[in-house]
Length: 100
Image (tube, rainbow, N blue to C red):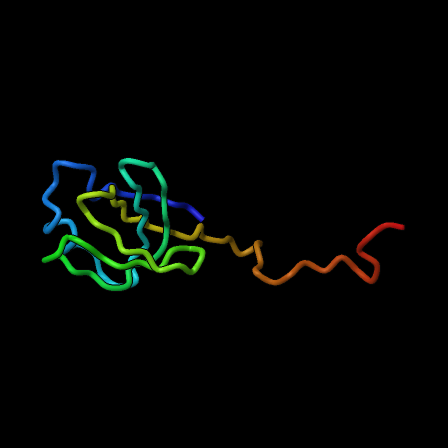
């Protein structure tokens, strides 16, 4: 997978405009500006009028992200194209795949 990202909010940007760009299901990364903790996950609920959104982090936790406290990055995930010779099927190693 190829992870490409765009920093949406890194101080100085208008939080309302930035949060209006987010939709439920978007892949995002949020970084706490004070502690540098990072969370990656998907947007659940966006409340631009409050400057916040809820996200489901990778570990299953639900996080409330405040645009005034966090740097927000929208993560674009693209899958590399496979060629015809590459198969998504599991490879067969014969009857005994491990040498004895």
